[in-house]
Image (tube, rainbow, N blue to C red):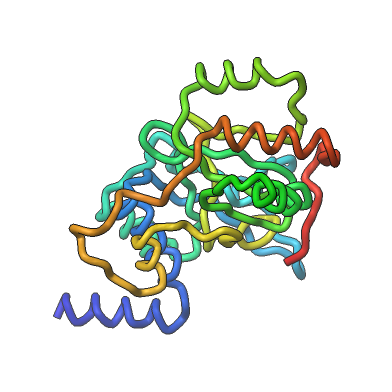
Length: 241
């Protein structure tokens, strides 16, 4: 009877479209070995106005940050991930960056859109790119604070709107809903494991641990060069999509 009830519950989630978050979170945690945890989410509001679940009036990342549990609870354990997103199927998916997981560089959305052309012109391969209406996040290979410090020290100037998400940081992953809108893949992860989100299931022997990720130095060099040539907004300029 328990199995039947469990099966019915999964089918119910699938019919309502609420299993997307759980499916994605399991892929990130168990296939790519990225530690994740649920974000605080949003509180219902009037019309399109939705406030962060933390109720902080000046929240810098509405809905898209850890709250309870805290960031240290991030895990790759499938049982914990299932429990979290079964109980909160619409919770944002927060990646704890650093360690063996991906790190990231984020920038205002308009500048992020322009930067894709700059990478193409330079013949530089990009890794996964997460887009929201206000900011784009370029996932990069893990780096230490020491490496980041040396990299930034070599630059004559770095735009203040660039944000770096390394050890002890976090970013939100698709298909999370945030205060600025839904997160989506602008550049999809290049790995057979990504197919699991769409229902494919490659053999375990052929699956890599996660998507290919570029080196942070290559990404920052292009972004700084691009911003020096065209300018980069200092805030979170909005890009409709």
